[in-house]
Length: 325
Image 1: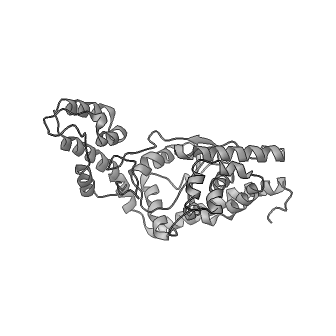
Image 2: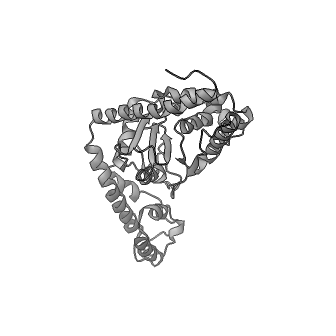
Image 3: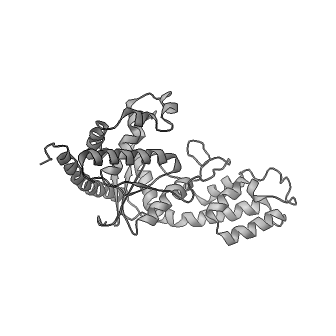
């Protein structure tokens, strides 16, 4: 960890073991950024309470963090922490709420649609709590999906307003960092999602990966093996586009269009790629002990609190509140 480097901050709600969509949409970016940035990644368990039918549990948190570490997140270079153990985030959220116009929150895309189902203050304040998560660490870069772009714009507006009113450039303007594969296709051709039941887990067994891919739908116009196909019509190809190197994809595409290979051949090549990608993840995860993972989170949370406390002292000074002793 090096606070002199640009700060990257991002969080993930604890839904348990992760799938390939999480890796290619988020984790791959996290791993790449940690080499040249001060990265702080957190378990967003407060955010998980918004509209939740059940509370997040320890096992879900543990399985998710194990997948972070398995993907290559290095706790020697990166701070990992629990959002719910950060009272500084809650305090900054409260202080920012006193200066944030209600209309800013009501216009965030998606709020009114979700409010019909879960009309809570937590839902209304969700993007402002995200802003507090970012600004408590003076985050400069925030890896997010395209669906979170409006939330990040709100964080910039909140930071800009606070800076202007205080007469100090206390908060930087956080910028989005988007993945090159924000939407990974699932087994049914729709976006990969655990809730949709169309996902392949990061640490799923090779046998299960091969079985799931064999059952995937393909080009609907290719009925028999000897029929020519069109990769762009095939859901399997959407996975190849993210996972398989371009030279190999060119050979597979040519084989599909000339009926030189069958759909099962194409699926088998994809399954082999996925299993090879998963191998180091399974190996790293197998080497982790539960006590080790919990200890890493404890150490990271205390480190993150030290960063956030410094920011809150500055905020309290600007607002003429007595700083914490």
